[in-house]
Amino acid sequence: MVRFFKGRREMDAASFQVTSEDFQELLKKFKASNDFLTFRFPDDDGYTISYFNSLVSAQQLHEQVLAVISNQPKQGQDLKQLKSDIPMEDMKLTTDIKDIQRLVLAGSVMIQYKKDDKMCLLIPCVHSVKRQISTPESEYTVVGSKEAFVESLDSNLNLIRNRLPIPELQSKEFRVGSISQTRLAVLYIDGIVNQQIIKTVMQRIEDIEYDTIVDISFVSQMITDNRNSMFPQLIDTERPDHLASVLSEGKIGIMLDGSPHALVGPNTIISFFSSFEDYFQIWNLGTSFRLIRLFAVLFSVLSSPLYVAVLTYHYQVIPTDLLPILISSRGVIPFPPILEAIVLEGTIELLREAAVRLPAKVGSTIGIVGGIVIGTAAVEAGFVSNVLLMLVALAALASFTVPIYQISNTIRLIRFPFLIAAQLYGLFGIALCSAFILSHLLKLTSLGSPYLDPLYPLRIHDFKDSLIRLPFSKQKKRPQFLRTENPLRLRKEAETPTPPSDIDE
Image 1 (cartoon, one colour):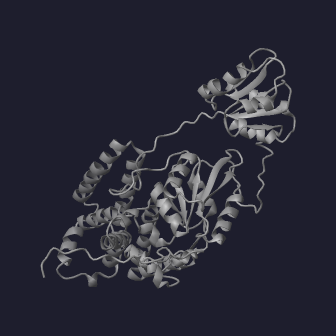
Image 2 (cartoon, helix red, strand yellow):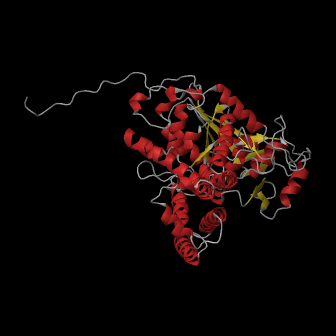
């Protein structure tokens, strides 16, 4: 079993990195690959140039490196002189084997004066394959920025620094993955963020021990407080404006090279039901939509279990006017309510997975047509009742109102324990399952901060931007659960001038 944390920073690189100081052994490993090129320039008495063709920009190599070397005298060539003649940054003259390996594999050109000389001049000529900045997909909003993160860490840092042009914005870089050696950046605003949170995150990142880190979700699973919880503790965002906003609150951001998403923490459970678009509208509309989402989530989780519990144990609570409708709906159904509910819920999940795995145009068609055809056929065949079909369809629709994708998967999963509890103990089973989940949430933390804030521990101040969203003028302080060094956001309340009136008094 692979261990993620071992309590030490150094990585076990014996099997994957060069440990021998023999320079020729390193070159031998490089030359075993067909895309590694080595040649003498301009003739047999010139420099030895080596590089990976797949990592180096040919245009930059010819225009900025080879053009300068061709003008060098044939006698008395010197790497130091060559370094001063080439108009490029971040060049390095070294004999260190590890630096040579790291930089060549990162896209640098290696130049030697003598063929067997260990002294190398490493010139960065990286061939970057970048995707153009596009619109957000999973966090699309009608109002607001239309920029989304891309796979390049440098491009993502540029998007953040353009929004927060302050020297206090700090970026600390790490290398994660003993094979992949992927760049990872931790972002925070010095003077605002709690330093204890920064130390905790950095220590957990340093303790990551895994061979290949290809996506930010890998990091999320390795640094969360409780890796066995089905409730996400770090928010995954693809919006630069969202990340810039939460950094100013005192949270931290984590970005990985090659991943078009960033992690945000610490978070509360209310954060997963708050859309960034809530802040683009007036506060009463934002509050109303946030409450609608919370109600939709509760309905999505409890509607089917309540149907099973009431029809199995508590049919006496059904209103008299509704009883004939339920009797006629279930009159020909040969299955108990629990089996009927599991069949429908399972069908909904199958349609969701099919819609996600298929191409976009085909997936949307499968989701709509498949749901209508299968639902109608199931009711006409007498396998399910039309009342439950309507409840399950509404529950599936309500689950789509969640703005954060990670928590929507949790909502899809926890419905099934509620269904089983409702079948076993009725309404008492639903209450018992709710108590188990609540006790788990009470113990859960996000980077050391309570997950149920501001409900537990009770913090009245944090209610200003949790279940409700008050105007910006009322949010003078940052959230208390972040324990920021500078809690003030609004230092002086501006006086609202009285507009002139054109009505004669």
